[in-house]
Image (cartoon, rainbow, N blue to C red):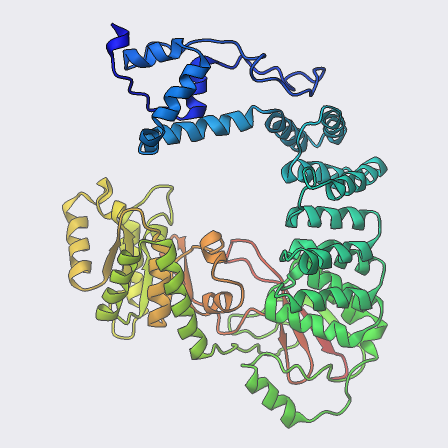
Length: 575
């Protein structure tokens, strides 16, 4: 009866094979004492027919030999290509086969060694893999090199270079092409061997020889190595190479350059690094603040600076730069007075009495940023939804303030409280010169949630909506994009306690966005009297250089916005 049935074989070759053979529990590398010798998939796997199938003819086919099955596959090949579900199953089978192959199991065990920082075991597995001719790829090598670089042992250094040499010296069949992670790890090994020159050569080989763009982490071993050795000129060379290739140094790297400039008494470079910290980092960590204090307290700092300077030229430079710095070099002469201090609410230094300024933002920067934000949001959100929102803002805006509804609804509790949001909106309304309602951005789940089911809340939501003061973001959207765009395009305040530090805000870069946030974010705290609004400061929280040559360097603080920020104040004692 089976012979009269028409075959309906819809299986890919790799899946058909599983009808004839079922792999026993793989013994490869499951025990550390076992061999890395590859297994013959035909002789080592037992035959076990698949259980009853949907079609009798499929069960019959499974009982035939592999040769007969291969003939059936060739006959049905054109039909297989029209079966995406079967192809998906085939892809899963192929992934499983790779995972359970000798190379796949080796990679899994190396990953485990990496998590456990077990360099010795990883090297044993590697040696055994070579003896048994297990194929290695770049992932295997990167795991091994990483473990060697982080072992902090002479054995790790030695074996790391041996492994890299073998990786590069193979023939066409066994040679493995390194990637960015490979070169970066080797640079770390070179730096650990106190050979920053080699670390730098590896970075240049990555870029110029292999066409791979180095990342910031790729340069750090060479830069750190030269700085530790006091080789300032070589450190500056690495820094210049970074800049030429579009890689910007961050606080840690600038602090290294500041330290080596200080140590080698390169006061011009110290000045340059302070200016770069001002432009890039704005507020510095405790370690960097201590380094800045040490510089101003040094004998070298005491003996540098112009006694006479062109006051008009300095003023012109301050205006041109937007305020808060001039870039004309060290001004004044003599010993510096260096203290930790605070600013009052108006931005007046409690030590020297100097008033800090609010650094201007060019209107064109705001326009360009709003355009970039719109482009990025359309890429991350459903484009049609965000374009619809932009049209809505253009029709109902501009606004005097924008409220991050979800954030302020959680201001006191770990659950959304609509009454808290209403209170915040009423308070935010007072920020408007015309007593205009702020724009409230709420996700659809907050509007349709149970907490908004009572009649009062429904009435409030309806009032906001009719007043053009409520926008409900659609399901699946990230409302952060919406309230941020509304605030920037309206050039208004945004009321939120969101620190804006997650991946979304990281996409916006580190130049314009922190300056905009500092000038436009209103934060809220809760007291016995009710909600308290904390307005943006009337001065910029950034490293400032005065027209008289004094410096004020802000340090970083935690998430508690009520904590008084500490500043380093450095002024000439004879000024």
